[in-house]
Amino acid sequence: MELIKPKQKDTILLNDIQSFESNTRFKVWWLAQSGFLIKWRGRYLLFDPYLSDTLTCKYQDTDKPHTRMSELVINPAALSFIDIVTSSHNHTDHLDADTLIPIIKNNKDIKFIIPEANREFVVNRIGCPKDFPVGLNDGLTYGHAGFKITGVPAAHNDIERNEKRQCKFMGYVVQFGHFAVYHSGDTVWFVGLEEILTAYKIDIAFLPINGNKPERKVAGNLNPEEAAWLGKVIGAKLVIPHHYHLFEFNTEDPKNFETQCYQYKVNYKILEMGEGLVYP
Image (cartoon, rainbow, N blue to C red):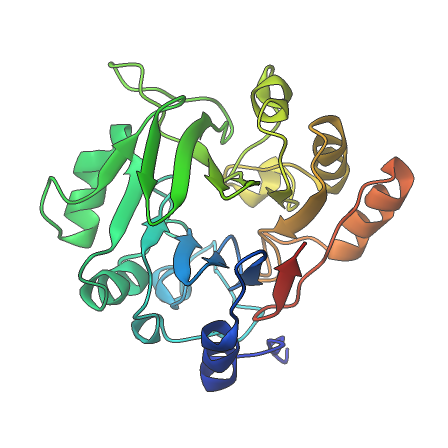
């Protein structure tokens, strides 16, 4: 099977990122899976990057092969201008040492946002000082580089908390200027999610669409209809899907999401990997 080629990659993508300038608008790029890069007034926030072949190598010759569908978009070491990077939970496609270590190494003032419940696991995987990550829980907020990040619970497949009632799986609402975006992390729908998000008047919701199929033997996510409907009920001005076209066993056709958005009259954009979108 021929790998899906990014819209932009490597130097071309990097030039696009670095050339965008605006005082009134921001730009977002999809870096595959659940990874999104936001540039706002010369500052950069990177959600949940996975830019390696860690999982493909790990599960090679097992009964759960992670066969890659798409080319790598960029070498993480090239991202030497990041102000904030996030991990929403401990699964490798959201907490990848081969991606995060070079990013952290090449950005001396970077802030690394994680669920506080995962601190010990994160520190062990990344090999960073225990006090380096910035830990959040649901409802807690941290500000840096013009971005205000608030933790939101995520259910993958359940809302899991440690003994301190801290969430192990999270999403993040980020406010900057007069904008607000929501990155879901990995989540299924749970009671109360729409009430939490509606209050923020979300401009862009980044939502997974790969669904929740037990036969995959991995935790699930929103399916295309659920993602479209969630975008509608929270009043998101735009919904961008993620978590597809990386591994053959755990993907979804984004055209199914497009169909549901038409049905529910939801404004959406399906990005190609490496593609940027200027908002508004």
